Image (cartoon, rainbow over all chains, first blue to last red; front, side, top):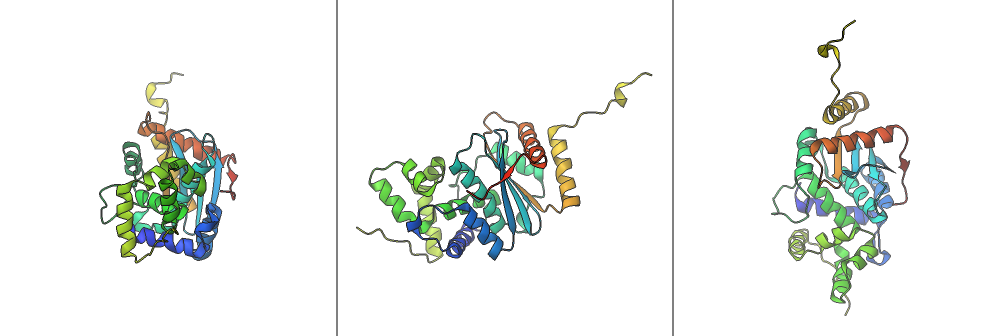
Length: 199
Length: 71
């Protein structure tokens, strides 16, 4: 799936949620219910203790999924983000992107981090795109004026993180100028007009 | 009775245990896909990752996880 397709999915989910920037953060529970209603996949999110090497797992069956989220030593914001990233897989993955080779996936995960910004290949890996879609759902492009304004006012990324209830590290990646350029290009292709801040 | 080395069952590695679990989930429980969000892997090797996944799945199976509707 292309970046643009992932962004379109995120936009559709936000539309189904009736999300407005004025409401601040979007509940992951709302996204879960939208997936159940519109995508006919019933996901259940569970949390419990897990070793440090793993933050979450998605176990997907045909029309059902368990999402296991690490709870110990994980902030509420991180729990929200990793749960949303696993939900994003339900939105973007098809049989071709299912994990058929577990050792290869694990090798890839252990060897590589998954930054949002890469060389913008036409086709993205499911892992990376899911992370991007989760970002776009929890920190919507339509709200970028709010984020830009906060930065212009000299407020740190942690303030944006608190506004959207997402991890600060994810905000830093999301606000990377080079990544913003890629997003702008992709959103332009979708003919999305972002909100203009009132001055 | 003498037990030779060849009669002692070899312990499964973490990856073998995980792949066995994964195969069973596919065949018996209709699992079609599995994905992970990796955590702190700065000091981890692949085997550590599998150990963590096995532990997480065992705890989930044992009912140590709770449903979350509050995220």
